[in-house]
Length: 489
Image (cartoon, rainbow, N blue to C red; front, side, top):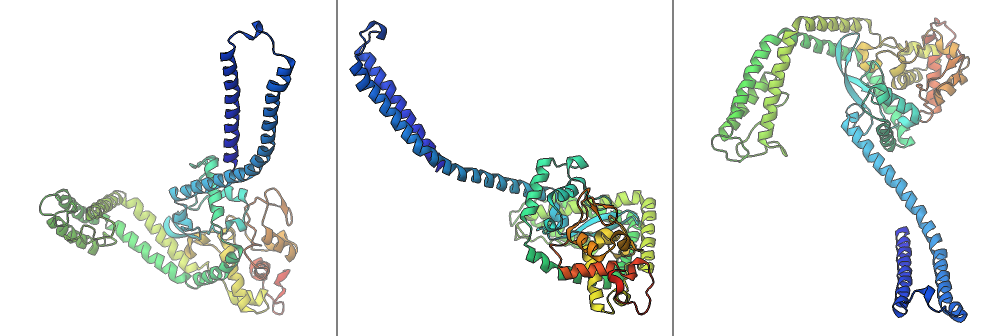
């Protein structure tokens, strides 16, 4: 609409200018004598002809502008809103490109629903493949925009989350960080969905607690395999090296001979590569066994056999190189692997992940074991990530529950001394901390404590408060007959 108005105004102005120029030209052709040398026009001519035309033109122009300006103004509002929407869409597109380019979804889930990451756990020197990465599709219910930007820019030390902003040493400038924030905000689920996630997360936390011993036993088994892999790396590197060399020779000569399916691999080469693949797969050097069919150019749909063969050979060569490097550093790696195995064994024996829910029920919930189990599950699902060191890495790496990590320890009466009443503590859990704003007894917020009021119900928040203020965490020994007094300690 605005463009149409501007076009009409421009055409009108051009037409009026052309009229004036044309009038002057015609007058000049009739009377080429300079005006200062010719007889002047009479007053009647000036006042009834030329002046009238000028005044009529001015009135018409003024009338046209009187109508055009309001119309243009009304269209301008929509045009400006369109620009804002267009700019927002462009920012979301750029933010999604950042999300994809830097692999945010690889750790936090493709749609931001949470996931896992690989990380070398510093204390044990064990590589953890299942470090729990938090969901980002509800993060704006827990933090404000500046607080989320802080985590993106500066990362989180001692975790797989690196700094991404230039100020923190990362690759993203402020515009890219802002675009990424806009994209993350665009994938937020609605509040009802966020509340519906609670039961699943609590159940998951409970299952983790029940299966912790088995999980640690499995990690010990994997660590033992890693130790064996390092010990045999010399012999294994020679075996896989020979297989890789054979595969490379076949691939290099694959263009010679009959090629039934026309994929660039001769029939003989495809049969030979299939045999090599079977040998490598049976020896454990390939995760899958590609089969090359001389009658089909794409044994894997959408991937040419030539490309699949090149990828297989490259994987075998990479494995051989990795094993060779492992063998060269065998002593150092063996020492590290043994240390990790001892660490895992000690973790299995100490079982720091265990929580006596029966004692919690007796001490803080008047014997209500169902409430105690949910309270422990709520803490593990929403609080342990920051308040229990090593929790995200898995049961083998975590310390005693609520003993502190990124956030302070909540044991030995901390919850009672920091918050004199359960109501004060509830309000803090509900709203979180604000940077530089005081809370509790002499506490000063950093903005890193999220507010859970929009993702947890009042009943669940109260369960957490009772659990944290109960005798099982405050170091006070439970005394028969005082059950249920954990609300105020």
